[in-house]
Length: 531
Image 1 (cartoon, rainbow, N blue to C red):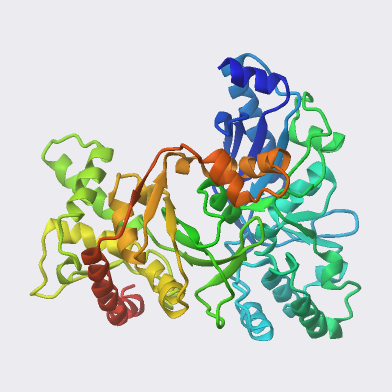
Image 2: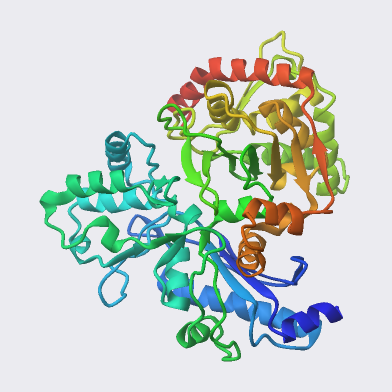
């Protein structure tokens, strides 16, 4: 307690703030990288004029309230306030569209990653670049605005992301971390910046519009982890801390996206490592040794905060249907007058799944609450199906719903692991699927045929991850890589659990996924006819 207090008083604590989809979180870390205080602010996106957005007022007041919440925690714990810091890092949900005019005014309401209005742009740019451009990427939003002949496009002087905007407000610097930038526009991993060939292709394709800008004119400068990204200005200090106590001059690390901070927070930035985040949705990120042989619409290519290429598989559905079934068992128990502890219920049912047949006894389920682009569905219908010969018991029932929570993810990962022969030494899991010790880990290890680790710190999240990136900037030794810094100085000695794949379970998951793929017409019929 005394060490933490002196760290804060002496201005050596490091602050990380991440703006997620439903919560803004601030984490203050000490010199040993452990969290010593935190703050948060809950918020929700708005659906206005057919756009998912957060207003500029939402962003400003949300950030300020989160920081004030942190100050309150510091005051309550240590009886002091924050006047200076060792460093600050800002992170936010990736992608989206924020174009600004010459006066720094936002030209159209912030279009978040959640908007799916850019299908035409996504397809045309993927074809032009021969590089997968998902709908949520910033360049897809810009090109769709051009295709739609939106008036504001000719007035753009700067385009960035939410993290880049807030960093600009605090420092006056128009920069982005390379991981965040890789969700704006493809990165050339040799140069660590936006791909010049593709920039030229884009400029040529849009030249007939006569815009007064070229893409490089309006895009931020790309920086790697550890590079100088500016310092907190007087204006920035007042913007962040409305109480007026925070001093200017604090260094900031390059702003990053939630994918990059997730990699930092799970120590999965080195080549041949990866992480899987499994909750309401699920995504996997694997750091690649080389480029893929061709374009896959199921695979997004982004980078680590250090600029290494990452293959990302993102799926819309994971635990929602599984949670719904657990809710049914809760209702069943309560109808007998039994009070149910939800943690115990989840643990009991999850562990029951480990008793099931390796291939789920012939059962089949689809957990599609919403559409799933990996398998080609624009809408979802949760489905459970079996034959009269299937082994229908509780263990297999729970096992199939755990398997299917990773079904779409495995479909995408098989492209990387089997078609592209990508090597993975270890995957780190985090999120709700892994809360019951050992179960989600075992299922994921079977799905990917690789060891899966869960660290005790995995729940700290992206705000901790961006704080680690800020600490790396000010504390790294000459030539020390981010991967080495995290392994040797942050995660060394941290406890966690590691589960290696069981050969029988791996074969069972392969049998299940063959059934899953063959049965997709069942899901298609449900989407088409179940209204």
